Structures are given as C-alpha cells and as structure tokens.
Amino acid sequence: MQPVRCLRHQPGPGQSLNEEEENSIGRQYTPLDVREIDWNRICWEKRKRKSSPSGNTAYWDKRAPAFARNSSKSDYSEKFLRLLELKPHWTLLDMGSAAGTLAIPLAGRVKEITAVDISGTMLALLRERCAQRGIGNVRTIQGAWEDDWNALGVGEHDVALASRSLITEDFESALAKLDKAARKRVYLSTIVGDGPHDRRIFRALGRDLNPGPDYIYLYNLLYRMGIRANVNFISYQERNTYEDPEDAFNHLSAKIELITPEEEDVLRAFLNAHLVHSEGKWVMSYPRKISWAVLWWDKE
Ligand SMILES: C[S@@+](CC[C@H](N)C(=O)[O-])C[C@H]1O[C@@H](n2cnc3c(N)ncnc32)[C@H](O)[C@@H]1O
Image (cartoon, rainbow, N blue to C red):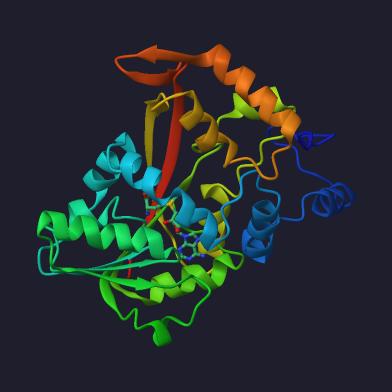
C-alpha cells in the first residue's frame, strides 16, 4: 500500500502558503481523475491472474448439473431476488443465466425472459426444468458476451441482468452490450473481495488466491463509461455441502487451475481434516462469509 503523504508544512489558522510552497504542493498533489484510468485494462489484468478456471464452455458444461442443484437453494438467489423491482408486463434478459438460478423463480414475476448462456448444457437443463414446472415464457439462446448480440437475436428488454456471470476479456464492451439491451434498468452482480472462493484451501496448497476484479473495479469502469451505478451488498454465511468426500474433491479440484498430483494429495488431506458428516451430507467444518455486490442503474 502507498504511504499516506503529508504536507511538510501545514499553514496554521490565519497563515497562508508562499508561492514556492504552493507550487511544491501542486507538483506533489496533482489530482487524479479516475476517468483517466484504464479500468477495462485493469479488470482484464486481474482476470488474467484469476486462480480458478472459468473461461470456457467445456468447464461450464461439466459444472452444469452440480451448479443447477446447488445454486437455486442458495441464500444468494433468495437475497438477489428480493432486491429486484420488476413489473409483471416487463421483459427481462438474463445474461449468463446458467440453468435458471434466477430465470426460474422470476418467470412468474415478468412477461417474458430471454436466457442467454455460453453453455448448451446449462440451457438444456434450464429448458428441462421449465418443462417440469410448466413454465412457458423463458426462451433460451446459446451465446457469449463476445458474440454479436444482433446476430444472436438477443433483442431489447425492459430489464437486463447479469448475475455472477460477467466472465469475459473485454468488460467494457460486455457492459455496453448489457446496457444497450435494457430499456429501463440494468442489474449486475459481482464478487466482493474473495467472493465464493475459499482462501483456506489456496493457503493449504501454497497458492495465492486471485479472485479476479471485484465490484469496485467494475464500478469505476462504469463511472468511466458515464454510468453512475447504485450498489447493494448481499452477504451470508455459507458452509459448502457435498454428497461425499469424492464429490467435494471433484467440485473443489475443478476450481483450481492446473492442479498437480501433489496438490491433489494436499487437497484430499485438507478435506479429510475439515469435512464432517452431518445429517447424511458432508459439510465443511467452518462457515465462510460470502459477499456479492449488486450494481444497478436506471436508463433514464
Ligand atoms: C457463476 S455462473 C452464474 C449463473 C447464474 N447467473 C447465477 O447467478 O447463478 C456463470 C454463468 O455464466 C456463463 N458464462 C461463462 N462465460 C460466459 C460467456 N463468455 N458468455 C456468456 N455466458 C458465460 C456460464 O456458463 C455460467 O452459466
């Protein structure tokens, strides 16, 4: 962290600085304009260093069944849903919808939902879950932030939301697309600090945890883009729950980029020490506080 710089000579009440002192302070304290900082580049640099792999379709296709099982039961979706102010005649774009963490509970609250995701497996699960529940107002499009949204037929919606799904290299272009797709309001949620990542596991492996750009970088990027976002925070305590130790191992090792056989042994030992059997499930012995930021803005 940069040390706080102090004025060598502070004028007392009734005193003023001479010209030389004024110039010297001016040189030291050239005001920084946050809009001149290339936040898009900084977001990308942070994303490149991210510890967990989350960039490709195959990764999300593989995670789809477990993600669908767990995410709809989480405190996150309950709290996020409570923040949304929607009207029954509105249409909604859910970008990076996964298997419908939000699209399924929201289907009854709006007229129509367009769910877009890079993973065909996530979308197949979403369609299956809609069919099981008799939901007929969710259409799916397989596509990515990087794609041409006109060619995909994403269209314009009253509300555009992206929940935990801004996974891209060019954040500015993705945010511009999301903003353009909304007529009335945009909701975007992203990590605060470590987000859902478990720092203890990375420490046990002797690795640094780089969770990627958190909300403050995106907030500044939006500001640079001329968007002054509102911010709400969602926080809760979570204890990860698994079917058995092998399920825990598969789930957690998939989140570690290029895990080595030695690290796999360390992870197994860590799980051996920290997983406890409770009511037919395997639960981590320690709870973690997880926080997300919801950035939202009105279009007018
Ligand atoms: C962490 S999940 C979040 C899903 C859901 N919105 C939620 O909050 O539970 C991230 C989702 O983004 C999708 N995704 C990842 N990269 C993407 C990209 N470049 N374009 C579109 N979707 C992407 C993944 O397939 C996955 O379904």
